[in-house]
Length: 178
Image 1: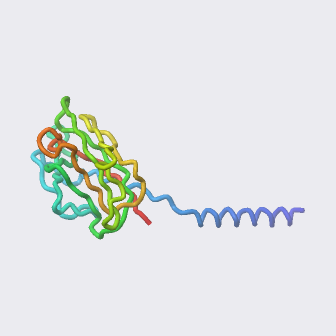
Image 2: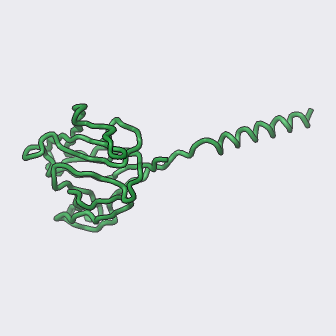
Image 3: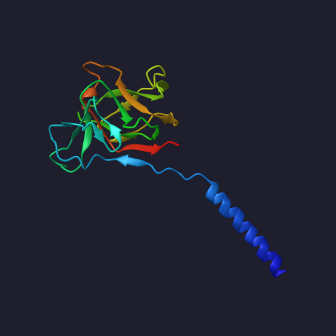
């Protein structure tokens, strides 16, 4: 009896191990906090390459406040921008913390437009899925959960009144795609 139980337990262990090894590993979320960029109360254009992403030609500047000189965040200086991996690889975009630097009268709307291999896979403009931001840093992300290679942000009102000049972003969250 003990021999049979031992074989049975051994077989169960082997099955459990094989299932555990065969199960895909959950990709860890990587969060860019930008805190290593240094103090810049006036805003400094993002380096062309930072943490595996290309910021060349974007409208992002890193900033700090005098109250929190070691807490870097990004501020937008144009009404649209994109974010991509340097090597063009795909990733999952899990959102970022967005808010308006304007403060109490903040009233901004923007759209996510996500692409993969040159094709739009999520278009917040055509879906009329605007994302509202206010003075409180809040995790905002599009409902699309597939892999992308480009994250674009555009504004409902590209000119004055769109609040694009007050958008701030921090804690940019991604996961590697297979």
